[in-house]
Length: 369
Ligand SMILES: NC(=O)c1ccc[n+]([C@@H]2O[C@H](COP(=O)([O-])OP(=O)(O)OC[C@H]3O[C@@H](n4cnc5c(N)ncnc54)[C@H](O)[C@@H]3O)[C@@H](O)[C@H]2O)c1
Ligand SMILES: [Zn+2]
Image (cartoon, rainbow, N blue to C red):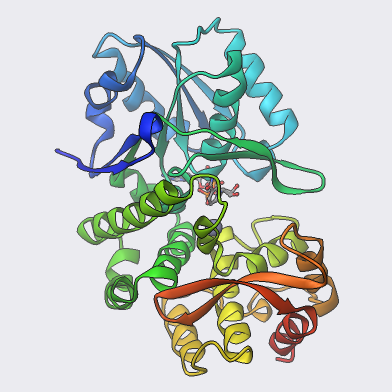
């Protein structure tokens, strides 16, 4: 099928995002113009590789592209120094050169790890993102943030390194668990809440079809989100300003994820869903947002089966411990905290003067039950 095409405009680092249903079978032809040589290595994880690596490899080999396949363990633990060493050593054993293209086939974990490896292997080799989770298709595969985790926190070691191409095959989403699909929807809704009230309305209307796997609806959502992300990244590639708006709900969300040790007890998109509700309440408490928005958001998230409060996740929460993450966070500046807050549906803003006590009280208000 013919893919829909979008452009991420970054001068000499510009690239295309291709979105469509069933693109893997013809991926060789689509990728070929973006490869500096007929040599590639697919890196995937142990869950995704058995599902899609053979089809991708066959389509590359059909175009005379020499192609190896490597597989890493699935899960966040792979985004580590040990995981990076393992993938780099396996790659080097294949004797790549600077024109060998790495292809990240998987979710955000594989995309972040392979992107980082590509940025340092032989001082930089080209790479292509083939995202296979909804979260990766609408968010992590676009924009060039690559990272591994450190003992001190998540995504603290990495680089800005843009791919040559993003190829999102919607058909890969058919094997994704409903829970991971919902988590991806959390990030989709974030785009509407943050910067596009019309898209937010569209989400409310189409959420059920999207989560039922309606491919037309999925395509519209992926395209809309990639368009918004491309626009933001083109304006602020290295997050000096407006790119931070993408972090709506993330300061709260990351604190909750950190408390749970980034385990499967709380997926990133679920944490973002809760974080958006908390950001709404903080925005209202600071007099920025109409208090009627929060219950509307909560009703929608509940209807689609996403959590809306830390209390929806089984864990012994403590407001002091959650709030401690904000303070430790790189966003803290002279006793005041920086949060992405909402003025209205579709309008987020970065607020640098959030009183720690107000943020703490907002967290505490969620733990009362
Ligand atoms: N770089 C960025 O801008 C950015 C943005 C958001 C998130 N992230 C990162 O992304 C990561 C989360 O990504 P994720 O949610 O995609 O997680 P993930 O990569 O761990 O994938 C989730 C699970 O689904 C499996 N899976 C993937 N595709 C599948 C498919 N098509 N069918 C069946 N199973 C499949 C994986 O093996 C894994 O077990 C986090 O590490 C986060 O920090 C990065
Ligand atoms: Zn996110």
